[in-house]
Image (tube, rainbow, N blue to C red):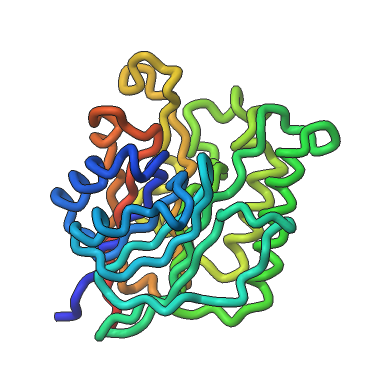
Length: 270
C-alpha cells in the first residue's frame, strides 16, 4: 500500500507565541509536513530548536519582524525552489517554495500568504487593496508560464471565493476578501492548472470556513466564518487524495489563532 503523506497548512499568527499550539497540533495529528503563515519572526530568530524537537528536521522559511512570514516544516528532505519572483516589488516574505523529497516521489510545494487588502475594496484609493489584486495577478502570470505537475499550493489566501465560503454571500460582496475583483482573480489563478482539494471533499453548496474573527465573542454560536485558507493540487495528484479535515477545535485552544489548521492526506505514488 502506498505510504500516505499528511500535510497541514495553518496561519499560526506568530510562531514564537504559539509554538506550544504547534506542539499540540503535531501531537494530535502527526503531520509529515506543516506549512505556516504569519510566522512574524525574522530568520535569525526563527525557533529552529523548538521546531526540530517536534520532529521536523528539514526547514525552509522566510520571515521578518512583526508581520508576514512563511515556513515549511518537513520530516522529509527539502530542496528549495529558487528563482521565485519578488512579488509586487516587495521583499515582504509572503511566499516560500520547496520540493519535498520523499522516497515514494517528489512533490513541489508552495506556501503563500496573500495580502489582506485593507478595509476598502477600492484600488484607486486603497494601496493595500491594489497591492492584493496586483499580487494575485502576478502570481497567476507566473504559474501560467510554468509546467505544472505533482504540485501542491497552500496558504492563507485572504480570499473566500465561493458563495458558501462565507457566512453571508449577499452581505459580504462588498467586504474585502469576498469582492468580485478578488474572487475572479483567485479563480483565474486556480485555473492555471490546479484543483481545489478542499472542495473535492466538501461540495460547493455546503458551508466551509477556516477563519473566525476575534471580534466575535462566541465564534461558534455566531459562526460568521470565511474560508480564507486553501489547498490546491495539480490534477495528477487528485486520484491520490484520501481525506481533508478542517481542525475547528483549534479555534478554542488557549490563545488561539483566528485561523484553524487544514489537513489533507494523499499518497505520493499510485
